[in-house]
Image: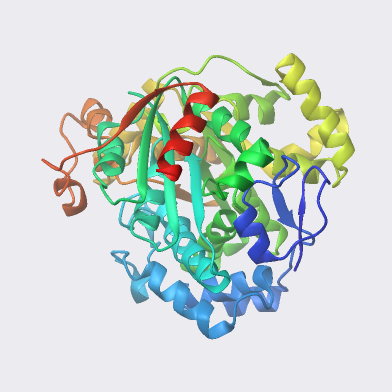
Length: 470
């Protein structure tokens, strides 16, 4: 398996090279040259596997011979050993029936967010590849909340790795901030940027675009621009399918709360690999650029507004380029022209033929703050189940889909975070805080370390240079 850039500016590279490169050197995003496909019979066989064996079966299609099978098996086992694994057969991402819907709980990892599923694996993968190549790596990433803490917990103390994480100052939840800043390992650096997540993400992209700086300081990516993140997330779509009753699998749909388009792109890849997903239901909050695109061909930048689901307080979705690459039939030149137009005008609009294809892939819905609280309240009152505000947006999209499109669908809603990470939003909805799990209670009173910094690429470069040269 070889990997290429969405912008067509690099020769095909191996899986290991793609992981280490992160963002392609031409500024594009890396993707497999061909999408591997499972036959229906193979899909049936996959439903009988444990989660770890399922991950190995999916990963092998993308890794090829880059990692020997015994090593891959050990990497996967080590990555998911830290999950609470409350599901049948110790499945780390269990599916539960909640009323007419199914909820896949992706929050049983060390930071209680779905990002752990990918980043526990990626941390071990980085350490493995660096050891083999006798190299060092400095990870640079931006977070709207959960990616940062999951990345830090996946990489803390790893040999040969430093991690620099940017988050928007005061715009992540207090628990998300504490999960990041209370990690005091010498290889962890937290930067609170005076701006929005989009500012932090822009800085990271601009630094990666400076190839001289990137090479001098051996920079790598841990955000979902790194292909290995997407690859690891593909697995739980297959697991969700295997956990719902066989009688309803023909009507399988998945609701995905998303801001950066990475999680739902993993679902799109799973569908292209042969998983019979009827429709992917994209859910946004009031920062609804992705919903507007799917519903009305309106991909236009607006101001980011704060919501109860801060991890989705994003306008510019970095993984959207991967989907556009396929929508433009892998024509990198046409894609670059569209992106240049977007950069110049702040707007992207598809022709009618391409836009029709979008509707075949996705349904979308927008859950504002009142709708989010109402969904949390109803789930608690009717089913004694507490949703976090991001998951609530997904449930809102699922209910709209059942009402408007396919009443008989078997919809799995991805639960992307534990509700205790957003206690104030939950309290507004149900008049009490959610129960506090041990992993959050342990944060109380811990010392923290963080550096406040301006939303300036030069300032962040200076900080990285000083830390790595000292």
